[in-house]
Length: 124
Image (cartoon, rainbow, N blue to C red):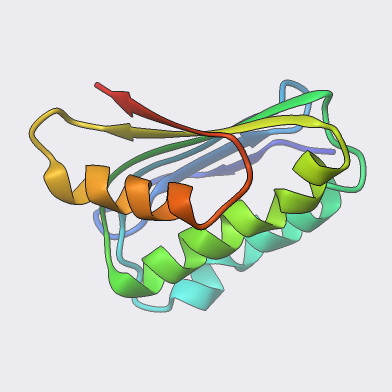
């Protein structure tokens, strides 16, 4: 399975999903004009990855900003990994936030409360 790399822009995040290492990164700003079209390759990649995942998967979110449409997408992405966790695979979501960014911290706390997947909040 190939690594999924999408370069970030002023309105879309950088995506770097590595199937060989299990390190998955979404970083930057997420407010694409058409959120479903932008994230379609991400969902397609995840749906393939979960069929034959690494023993350990880390889903890293380093978002500076995401709009409400992207927030729904983030929740859907996290939920796609729930079956992996329930099947015994090691998975963790790492949500990074700047010390002064209460909005991103609160968003992470909200996502954490909505999933059974292990979830870490990490200050940067």
